[in-house]
Amino acid sequence: MSKSWRPWAIGLLALAVLAAVGLRLTAARRTAATAATAAASAPRPALELAPIDVLTVGRHEFVRGLEVTGSLKAVNTAYVKAKIAAELRTLEVREGDAVRAGQVVATLDTTEFDWRLRQAEQQAAAARAQAEIAQRQLANNKALVAQGFISATALETSASNEAAAQANLQAAMAAAELARKARADTTVVAPISGQVSQRLAQPGERVSVDARLIEIVDLTRIELEAGVPPEEAARVRPGAIARLTLEGSSEPLAARVVRLNPAALAGSRTVAAYLAVEPHPSLRHGLFARGWIDIERRQALAIPASAVRIDQAKPYAIVYAQGRAERRSLQLGERGMVASQPMVEVLGGLAEGERILAASAGSVPEGTALRVATLAAPAASKSH
Image (cartoon, rainbow, N blue to C red; front, side):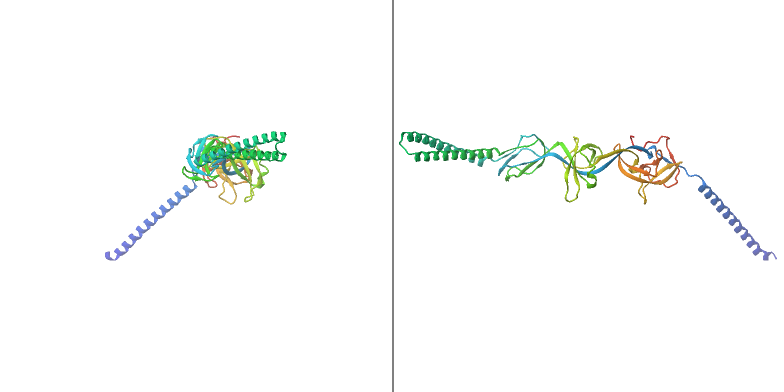
C-alpha cells in the first residue's frame, strides 16, 4: 500500500513547485511593468540652456546690402622696362624691396652706346665746321656781288650751300641728342614709389626693347574691383559705405564705392564697382576679399541668419515658448547686416519680444522642456 501512493506524492510535489515558480515570475513581471509605467509617466528633466543660446526677437536698424567678391588691386602699379636693347649689367632690387620714384634700380651695358654717342658728336662737330665755312663763303660772295666781281647766280648758289650746311648741322645735332638719350637710358630708374612685387630679369641677360625688368606696386592706395549684378547696379551709388574681409581673416576693413564702370563686362554682364579700401598693414595686391555694400537702412524685425533652420522644406526657428521648444515656420524677407552681423528680415512667424534658440543650442526636438541657466537672455544682436 505504501509503495502505490509514492508516485502520486512525487507528482503532487512537482506541481506545487512549478506553481510556486509561476506565481513568483508573474509577480516579478507585474512589478517590472509597473516600474516601467511609472518611469514613462514621470516628467523628464528640462534641457538646460546657456544664456547665449537664447535670443530675443526685436526690431533693428536693418541694413539692406549687396554681397560682393573680388580681388584687391593697387591703384598705382608699373612695370619697369628696358628702353633699349642691351646686356643687363645690374639689377639692384628684389621682391619686397621698397623703392622711391627716380631711384636707380638697374643698369645696362654702355659700351655700344658710348661709341655711338662719340660718333654722333664728331659728326655734329664736322657739320658745324661745314656750316661755318658755308656761312663765310656766303658773306664773301655778297661783298663780291656788290662790287660786281661775281654774278647774282653765284651768290644764289652760295646761299643754297649755306642753307644745306645748316640743315646738315641740325640733323647731326639731333642724331647726337638721340645717341645721348640712348646712353642715358642705360640707367633704369623707378617711375613710381612702392614695393617690388616681381623681378623678371637677371643680370647678364640680353634684354630687348620694352623687356620687363621688375614690377612695382604702390600699397598706399588699394581698391577692390567687384562685379555687381545688372539688376543691382542701379542701386549702387558712389560714396556708398562698404565693409570687407580678406580671405582667411575675420577682421572687417572699411571701404567705400568710388566709381562704377559705365560698361558691363562682356562675359558675365556684370558691372564693375571699384571700392577704395582704407589703408591697413594686411592689404596686399591680388588678395581675394568679400565685401558688403550698404544700399538701404531701415527699421525691421530681424533675427540672426544663423538662427534660421533650413533642414526642412520650409525655413523655421525654434521658439522658447512656455518652457518648451516649439518649431515655428518663418516667412523671410531680405538679408542684411546689423552691427556687422548677418541678419535676415522676418515678415511672418515671429513677434517682437519672443525668444528663439540660437544656432549654438543645436537641434532640439519639438516639445522638449527647456530651462535657461539664468533669467537674463541676451538680445538678438549686439546693438539696436
